[in-house]
Length: 240
Ligand SMILES: [Zn+2]
Image 1: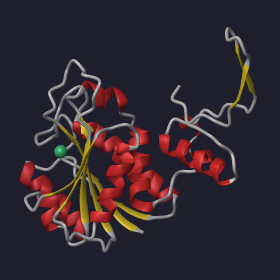
Image 2: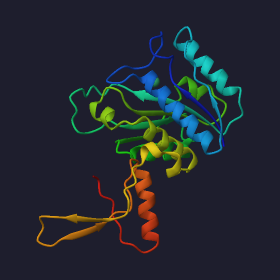
Image 3: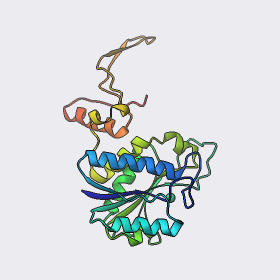
Image 4: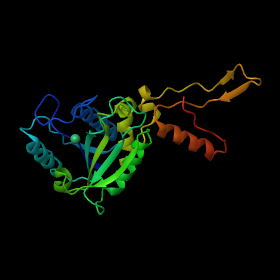
């Protein structure tokens, strides 16, 4: 695929930067954007980074992003943002969650948006679903199908505790391409436990559990579960 990706707003520390809560939108959107760009390229896609860091204000930032986007003929424009307004500073054990915007129901980006939203929700965030907005400048003015991802809320303690930049990027990439990063390409994210036998003591019967692997990304665990079931094993996923 050919894909434009940008992080929303100017960089932090400048005018027109993004929302600030426990984490800073402009900074985290750039970290996720960098990881998405790197992963998409590793998977063989053509990617253009259309981020603008230091425009003179909000509208200049938006129009410069759109000119960068429209300079390329792409299958999809991806705008990465973080949300705010949850105001959950204490943490209530529930995330406020993720949502993805497209221009309207006829947008060719709608299917991508649904899959990205589902993939991020698969990490444990509440899904706020795909939403339509004809008022968002980037969605209104880009010539290719476009979606705007609000990864999660910067001002919800539960969202921020769950948030991991690499996992967020992997979910976005999976939603766009249907491709997951291979285990060998993400050594930092996967702790594979050597197959073996675990003894549970203290029970009247000893139990021997055979473990195949443990994964930081739920999607990878789901994929292994499907593989095991496909070859006839009655397997389950345990959160540990
Ligand atoms: Zn934003």
